[in-house]
Length: 258
Image 1: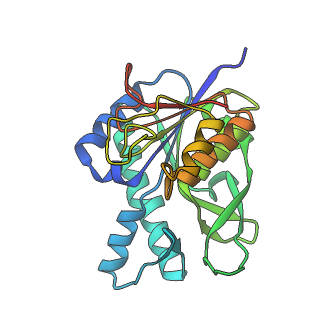
Image 2: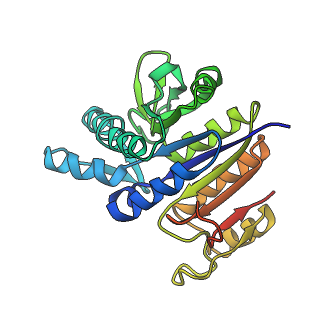
């Protein structure tokens, strides 16, 4: 029987709330067995870019990553946020190491081709270096991945954090029974966007399609849930979505099933 690997993705809005994020790190650190943390930080990157006088361009909720944006993202994701998380986990007794996709050639992407839109330095993941990640886990090291990948041409690329978590989960499912946790600002997938307590506790593909057609699920939840169902189809055993308390026992959350 394979041992269980827990892969947890935390959103930037949770990171911004220092008190809640400290509680989240305590919950994460308390998880038994091997684990991986993946984080974003888009709002903070936008804030830093503004302070530096750089304009942040968005299209349909997606960042256009020009050269200035990529420099800020690298500094903020792989630097400030990553190192603060690692320091926090070390304090809690988890021996963590902060990584981007270039470290150990761990997450390899191709630069997104220009079609109707040029998204700039954005990467679509094509390979995860499971051998490298496995070597860290076998030493009881907790990998902390920022939402940055790397191309074989030597480019650092901005990459969706949900996708990083999903692709690592899929790749590591060959070695472990992988559980994927998406922590964000809501308690789970909501039946009513205006009611934070209307959590759908179990969501399968048929129910998902029904909610999409009714436009109950839309915008940012669409790519997140698309990643979830793709991950289930490619070896990930279990997926949960919820807020900062997701890792606590008896939390209210959404479980994604096939």
